[in-house]
Each structure stands twice: as structure tokens, then as C-alpha cells.
Amino acid sequence: MKSILRTLAVATLSLFLCMPAFADKLKVGFIYVGPTGDHGWTYRHDIGRQDIEKHFGDKVETTFIESVKYGPDAERAIRSMAKGGADIIFATSFGYMEPMLKVAKEFPNVKFEHATGYKQSKNMSSYGLRLYQARHVQGVIAGMMTKTNKICYVGAFPIPEVIREINTYYLGAKSVNPDVDIDIIWVNTWYNPGREADAAKVMIAEGCDMVAQHTDSPAPLQTAEKAGVFGFGQASNQYKFAPKAQLTATIDNWSPYYIQKVQDVMDGTWKSGDYFGHMKDDVVQMAPFTNMPDSVKAFAQKIKDGITNGKYFAFTGPIKDNTGKLQLKDGEIASDGHLNSMMYYVEGIDAKVPGN
Image (cartoon, rainbow, N blue to C red; front, side):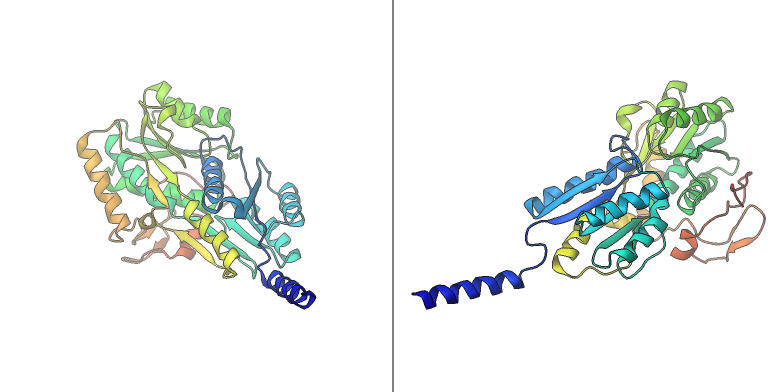
């Protein structure tokens, strides 16, 4: 009997030693640039975190830190999560790239994921969505709908992610309305509803009747509604905040990526790389087209369908920057490297990229 028990004990111990390191719970961490209640960028990332919990149940434990500033604060937050036993950490804003790269070197057994950046290492990936695809459709709508021929854009920071969306928004508008002009105001923050609203007010007062934004609150869209003009939701469907003003919205669907990367860690198949999700994969979504004529709706849908099936690409040459320099030759399609390093305004935008 003792021999049998000893054999069972050895077998049980052997089984335990062979089990994955994540047999208890895989720990998943998130670093957020804004509050989870911003109803925009961070809100959608947190939906992704919640979907991880729904998908994996008690196999995972998630945690997050919100409103983390760039620089030393970000580095401390990421390092604290790694020290706390996180198996994979997602840092969800461009400015976390260098802090995460630094911390990743210190924790070779932890997997690191950085959103909207372009640097990778052995245990750090980068990931993003082709949100410029939806933004181009918004530009087409704006070009068709504007009565003043003046559209505008509230920008957070002058980084490639934002610059390319300004460009594609303008190119979309220009493709259907050669007389359109664009105004841009930089607010130097991702989330500050007051500052975002003030920027929109200034441009509306100067004649803008189509408000787009690359900031994280619904404030610019709400400002558009109060002024009786139109706008677009950012990162999530913000229709409930401005039902008379929202024409459509970009909806960021991070859940499929997050679920897959967590599964990869569980399976031991996680690899460093770069992901750039496409509209065809349903990770770049758009809210219903509202407050517009059927003719505009139909044309916007045609452009959206063309992007989805790969027959239409906004950044196709010839494209010059606004200094006259040829950036893309005739028929040339912008590479991901080109898109991820875009720090120029396209021809026709009467402004200068800050810092250039």
C-alpha cells in the first residue's frame, strides 16, 4: 500500500512540475494614458481588458493603472507591474515606448506590448490599428457635407499616428471637394475636456462646420452639437453625447488582439512582432452613418467597402507634402514604415507640423 501511495505521490509531483507556469492564473496588466471613463481611447482599451476576463474566466487576473503620465511615471508604473508578477503588460499610448523598452530589458521573462509605437525587442511587441482608414471615410463625408468649405481637427500631440490621420481626413475631403480647407489646433494633451472644447469653439467661430478630433473625450463633438454644426466620434461610438451632430465615429476594437496575445502566452507561442490591424479584420469599425443625406451615406459606404476589400487605399501616390516635395510616386502605396514615420502635412494643408 505504501508503495502505491509513494508511486502516486511521485506521479502527482511529476505532473505538477510539468504543468505550465500559468496553471493558477495568468496575470495581465494594462497601463492607460487616460481614465477608463473617458468614453474614448482608454475606454475602448478597457473594454478589451474586460473581454479578456469574459473570454478566459478564472484563468486570468487583470489589473490596470489609469492616467499614467509619460516619462518617469510611466517607467515606474510598468516596472511596478512587472515586479508584481505580471506575465504580460500592455502599455496603451505612444509615449510609453521608451519607458517600456527600458523595463523590458530588466524582465526578460515578462512579455511587453506597446500600442501605436514602432520599436520591438526580444520580449516586446508593438501593435496598432489602421484607424486612418475610418478617418478617411470621415473626410469624404466632411467634404460632401460642409457648407463653409472649412473643416477642422483637434489634435493631441504632433506624432505620426495623429499626423497621418489629419492627412487622410484632409485627403478624403479633398477627393470630393477641391475647395475645402482645414484648420488644426494642437491641445498637447490626450484628455482634457475643457481644452478640447475650447479648441473646437475657436475653429467653429472661424467658420468650421465639420469637427474632427484626435483626443480622448467627447467634448469637441459636444461643442459641435451646441454650435449647430457636425462632427465625428473618436475611438468609440459617442452618438449619445451628440445625437444631432455625430455623423459617424471610429470604433477601436482591441479585444481580438488582446485575447489572442493572452492565448499565445498561455500556449507558450508568444513572439515579438508588429501588428497593424485592418478594417477587413473588424478591428477598425465605424458607427452607423447618421444625420446625412442618403446620397452621402451611399458614397461613404462605397469608400468604406473599397477600403475593406483592399481595392481602395487613401495613401496612394502621387502625394506631395505641403512644401512641394514628392513623398509618394505615382501609383506608389505608402508602406507601413512610411505611415508610422509620417511627420509631414500633405499638399494643400496651410500649416506647419510643430517641431519640424
